[in-house]
Amino acid sequence: MEQKIMRIGILGTLRGGGYANLFNDLPGSKVTAVCDNNPRSLEGIRDLLDANPDIAVYDNFDEFIESGRMDAVMLCNYFCEHVPFAVKAMERGIHVLSECTPALTMAECVELCRTVEKTGCKYMLAENYPFFACNMEMKRRFETGNFGKALYCEGEYNHPVTPHDKNMLAPGRLHWRNWLPRSYYLTHALAPILYITGNSLKAVNCKCVFAPDTLRGTACQVGDMAAIMLCEMEDGSLARVTGCAAWGGHGNWYRICGEKGSMENIRGTLEEVRVQYNPWNVPEGETEVAIHPARWYEDEEMNKMPGDAGHGGGDFWVAYHFMKYVTEGVEPFFNVYRSVSMSATAVLALRSSQEGGKEYKIPDFTSEEERKIWENDTESPFPDENGNATMPCCSHPDFSPGEEDYRNAEKDWQEAGLITE
Image (tube, rainbow, N blue to C red; front, side):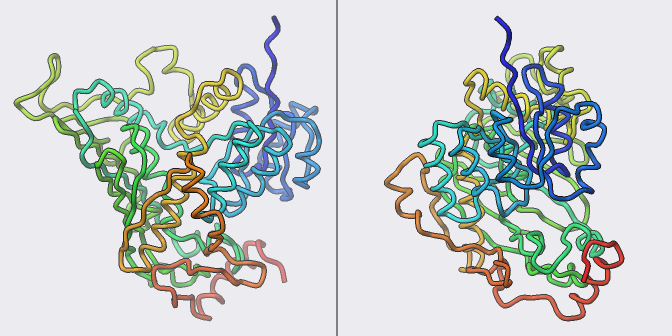
């Protein structure tokens, strides 16, 4: 029997361009439509479009989603827009792969879960950092049971930028990146911890590092350098994770501490894992302390599959697991419920940071009883077209850039041709 080809649409070709090439090369899938209203972004996939003239190009999402040209869509649009687009797609019977943690509000968390259940469509979060080789190596080792129960974990994502680079990423006073709370960009730190240990979120409290001078010269409305979140898991373990931190030195670090031993990726590399056991319970065949090369899989053929895919091969495994989900029904780890639990953690962590570190319980989004509690909570830190948000985006609610900061940002945008008067 001839294998059915899964038709994939891509919304947003700046970030989605890499995934477009991955899906077009994966057996069983083919990109059939792309949508972007920015000609510059489309130029980034010109080679793919020229080599595949049957790919339809749209600049309007409604026309794109109504075209009948796709079975699944990858959403790579703005961070603050995913749930409305996902809902539209699933209501038309189209499966969804969402590039960012989906929901801005607690109400959107509820709406997304209900839409998945109502439509029967498949939804998956395209979080790629769990699929670094170091994190997959730690997951395999954790699942042997050699480390016992997880007790404490750490996840750190640090991505500092210069004021100029910040302006290039966020052109316009109302651009979503200028209003993005530090806690909202938490998946690169938190998702690997959940994936390695198999844990679920129970509660969160948060304190932010307020350091507005680090972003002088930008239109950023968030004066925090980092959100430091303490997450309680359902099994009682704790995890300390950051949002998108911005202190000196770019990098990622993950640590798992269990009853019998601990492991972490070597700082500065994603290709090695340091393992240490208690001297009185070193597993047979292991040593008390050792550094191991990180591998995605033990199977050699599987290990070759990502090739040079982006984000340390993580982009490949996202596409691979999504295809297994929609074609074979293999449930992904980051299904809709785990995805919105991270969104809820982000939302409630922001509130915690504004309330002295108050602890918030993370709802069980499989429970309609718990969803009803939050279904009308629409408070969002992102502004409408007039610049008005319904909740502050910073741990210090009164913070905002000065006029000199705005002038510097606008000069950068104009010189780069990003903002026209």
